[in-house]
Length: 81
Image 1 (cartoon, rainbow, N blue to C red):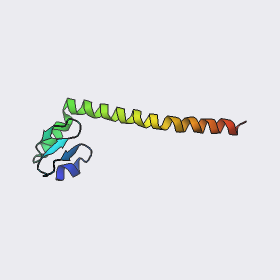
Image 2: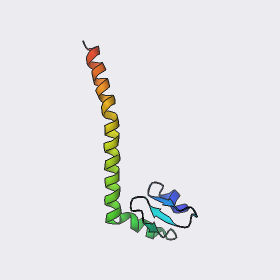
Image 3: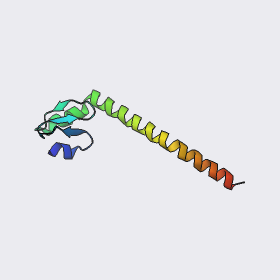
Image 4: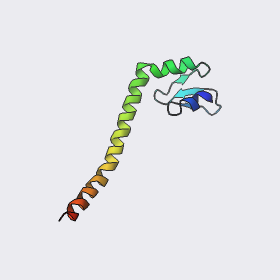
């Protein structure tokens, strides 16, 4: 489906490729008119959910990196001795 390719991280299709769904809102969107899709993406609820999802993803990445940074810090401090 063209809109899904145009906005790859925003939408997904049902198994019949007839309906477009917002990843953030889990709401069906009419895929025929681009303006409908763009208007949905500008909707405050969609924007807020996207911001929250991005923030959670960043926190998860930080949690994954914390042990690696701590290990590197330990290695660096041992090398300086």
